[in-house]
Length: 296
Image (tube, rainbow, N blue to C red; front, side, top):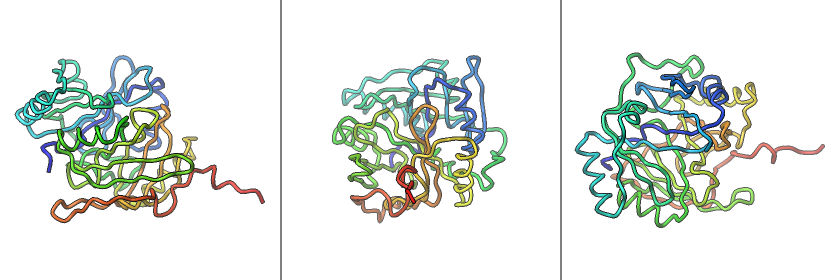
């Protein structure tokens, strides 16, 4: 496995904090773990103190991606490798480390301009996480918060960066057309989770979606219902992907990018795994609601 252990946290810069808090607590079923003087907040959904950082700003987009390593030596060693290959590495400030609640962190940008942060020493929560909405809880912990799909302006260049330099491993690729849109996605793993990171070719924002994985299918169905109850616009109905076998749905965040809520993804064993290439994105389902409207 890569010296990167997991996708540890994500940061979003958003305009409407109240709408995001409602999404987090009333739909996703995660908990507020920290609040800041400007109304920004962080959330948790497992034993880690913070998983999502929702920060006030104008971008309505991804702010940063946190990748966890085992120690300061691991962080600094990978940072040196990147620097030796021409990547500009920046030290973190005390304020940045305090916000993320980590001991050590450096940051840089990938070939598409996405900010990546290498860190170690995350703060753990003092109490177990219990969601009032997600009865069985989330599949996270050592596999990380879930996954995210970030923008790549040139897939070959970004693949070389993530796989060749960062040490991510190729899971598979999907190249197809989905309802008139050309889709090209590279999926990568850094632990047994099928993919923690994926690269989407020329998606409109820095992030297409982030995914949270529930431990039961019933909790996915309940979250789907909560979208309707809370007037959250569904992007794709419940379906199953061919590569990770996840049963999931997609809906829009208040910032215009999406979240995926899923269950049942298969895991990767590097001893036997063979990367595939698919020309379809779903075994079934994942239909935009507009396509289901019929005139009788």
